Image 1 (cartoon, protein in one colour):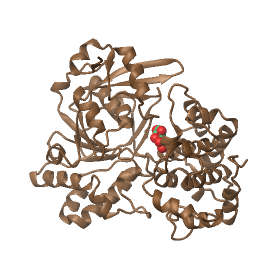
Image 2 (cartoon, rainbow, N blue to C red):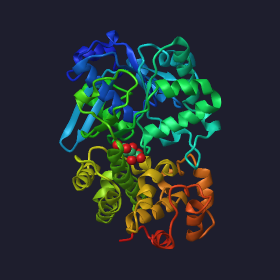
Image 3 (tube, protein in one colour):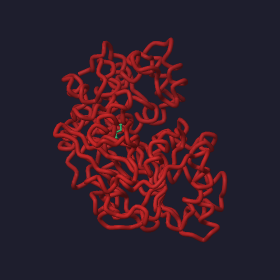
Length: 461
Ligand code: CS2
């Protein structure tokens, strides 16, 4: 019989928070408390409370799956963060999560927390599709009704009627200009549903842009078993990650915030150069490794990046295609960044599955690849065009046989477009005028030829 991790075990663990969790009020409501946030924002917040104090406990809201609540609530919100690399494993117990609530079930409690005077920040990692955008990037009102929007609006309405202060609404997803996008989407939602609240929102709430970075593969049963063998405790909420982490946040807060800068976060006036580099280089290379790697028979990122053909391809993608489109800030060295990314991808202890990254391609490739192509100014981008060829093959089901079906909110539409047609027609249907990906980039005839030339799982040099 294994023993489930519980708050009573806290004193027995060496690497743990020193603050008294029961004495800390909730300051943050977070939508989408998946593995990423547990290894990133909640980890920063835990150490910020340790270092500088403050009432910054987090209440998580799960939009869909009850799994996160089932993992964390029986453990009083506690979980282990395991940093893994070739050098070994480092564990820390994270105390900043108080509780996980479930959208659709705990509506009253969620609104209560959003409207509490102690709550100052509402943050989001709901993934790209969680923002409920249509093909042109604008809010899809029907989808939005099933997303976080109604809950958030109910919370804001309560604050407004109670005469409370506004909130910092902070997107921590891999969207270009995430804060501005969130603001535009909320404007559109509130403009339709409650114009008076829109006015209050405009005057009282901020939406800082953020760049978030840490590689966090989905936790597996093997990970949990390995951890249990080390600690003697069963931790269903454990997360596994790399040693590296970066968080750049625009200094645009509506009220108080945790001392995140005391534990490594960068609070800056302009996030754009960091965010663009991260999306086009790290995430761009990741998505390329995913589709090309699966096609070449690999399962994990570290295996794909050890394949000399793919390594050359993603090096080119980062250094010769993406980097020249980025206006680097004074402290950014893009050549060093690309080299460091190759090292991080090579981490043999993470087992980051390519199929996890391949998920939701329609939501990812605009900001990861198409933005580079749109800013290429005549430069050739064979690596990205090759990756697009691999994505089309993925949509045709060619490189996923062992993995099941295409996992994408637009899978039905996209897989229908690539069925029963020639490569050129597929490209036109998807990227041509009126196609689902047309708003970000339209291929020239040379681009089309390069995408079509991608055959036999051999990246075009
Ligand atoms: C990955 C990201 O799954 C994906 O699409 O590219 O989750 C990536 O690991 C993170 O953005 C790293 O910060």
